[in-house]
Image (cartoon, rainbow, N blue to C red; front, side, top):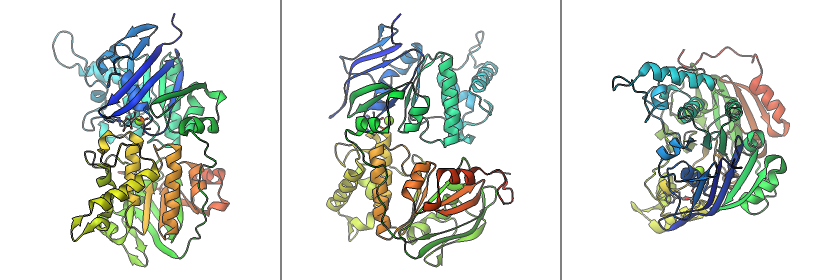
Length: 509
Ligand SMILES: Nc1ncnc2c1ncn2[C@@H]1O[C@H](COP(=O)(O)OP(=O)(O)OP(=O)(O)O)[C@@H](O)[C@H]1O
Ligand SMILES: [Mg+2]
């Protein structure tokens, strides 16, 4: 028997004008969980798209399955060989049921009549969901599920083809820590059943917790493979970035000034209740808490994407209009939403246009856009964040996932705002770029901005902010100076059993 279940040799891939993979090799052991890591644009997604038949490698590449050479020319080929992938941006059909999403492309057909066998399809979908410990039925509409639940459907879809090799591209990027824990459980269960797993993530914690081995790629090349117990943060950073990062968080020396922003007694029935906090000039305020604690909902309401029922939001003493994002922007509030792909990017546009979109007045002379100035500004920010592209004229749709994310952040940081609300600003970006984002946040704070950062990563909360607001079940349970905060205290306030508050109604109740 072959040592490896999957082996790739000599993989090259070029797109017009750009070499993305160069002489990459990769080996997957039977029944292992193998993490694939590297900076944004390193070529991870491209490599797994070659394994799953979305792209073909350039001519010289070789792929072996159980020691036998195979040719994977389409996703159907991959499926027939027992390879399934959950891609970086979940592409489900929100209006269809879970079962329809699971079996799309290979619907169950009655053997005697050429019609879809709904009963069999729902039964099998529910069996799969049960195997994955899902708490929802195959008949519910996909669009009504949370991101984590949709992820489970994607995995069910992968398993519905009896895959022996399951590839997951950043499955935890949009999940909270509890949801990630649940996903780890599912992945371990699959491993026990003999499925081999390739797992892409930017989170070291994912790798330490579930992977057996880890392979690092840099600039389209293979760097090395290790057994996970042999590596530490430093080995990984050096392998991925090519140099040591002395620290993960830049030093803060901004002294917050006077209060500029105030949220008082904010309520939205079913979502959050009596939320109050203040923000000072130059301050970075972290808003943290567990799954569904209401952080994102509070930010949406402040900015005006949704409407709150009670309370006030004031900027420099002026109260803001409720439910009016345009007025919020006009008043100087910038917002980076959690779901970047729904709101944020014009994919067919060039990078430069996307970045300068929100700060357009800076680049216009009597109504005409000053292209030179626009491109120069885009270039500076792009370099600062390390956006990997050939030039600022590249279309955003050709960028890797993390690099698209950097464009969204750059776009916001380029706008002229007084208060920035950043919902998980570093999700999906690599360690080096995280550092640059923190640096820019510091610069903006020094320039007098107030920043509200929603984050679930406690080291980030502690490393970046001045004060921490903890939420639980739609209520603020603690507000503390970061100097008094520790992971333990934050977790205690995020998870205490009976917060001294009225019970918040469930959404839609
Ligand atoms: N269709 C395409 N046309 C041109 N360039 C492309 C195309 N697809 C990917 N690239 C380029 O290939 C490089 C590698 O992209 P890939 O998506 O594999 O990176 P990645 O390692 O998955 O990054 P991330 O962590 O950001 O998801 C990037 O520079 C990207 O711009
Ligand atoms: Mg990717």
